[in-house]
Image (cartoon, rainbow, N blue to C red; front, top):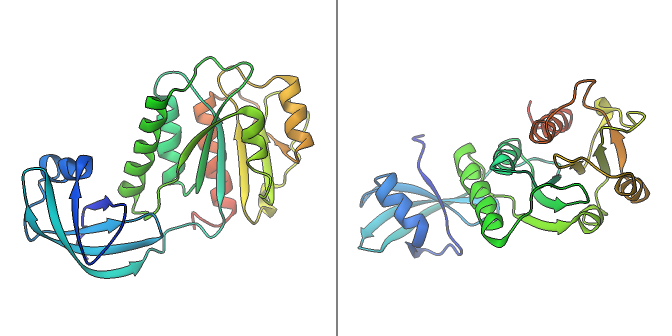
Length: 237
């Protein structure tokens, strides 16, 4: 089947109008024209084959032709809890996490954080998540949320596995080869974690994991840990 361009819409109906940024991207960047086929997504796990019936100055009208369940989502939910990083490094982490099948992303600030998030940057991270989802063929894009460290840790309370990547942990408490079920991952910012934060996470049920003897940058650590977990959960088979 031809690889159709993919677009998110708030609500899918038999006939609908696409406007705003998705319309501008479709017409000005992707050169979508009348009678072209596209895929519509509504973040429910389904995708809808549609035909562009009319293009106007600021919107386009589409007709839904069929509905199909997307089978690319992970069987086990992965939650990534990552410290916010300087520059555009967090955008890279979000992009790769989405490609690797992460279901939910929480960005946090902590005691040694050297970069701080605002509303515009959070909106940008969600846009990165959406674009990465479309690019890799998923039908759901993970929402990126921002929470202070302790709230971010508590956000993972219902996950079966809770993994905490910490540079000063004494041991690896997790056997990756036997990992199964929904899994939450915590990776710090450039400044790492304080001892108090480490103790708080362990009291909340997190187990320490090691990513080897070399010191990894925070963005590298996030991507590596997500990749390992996705592989062990069978999502990269």
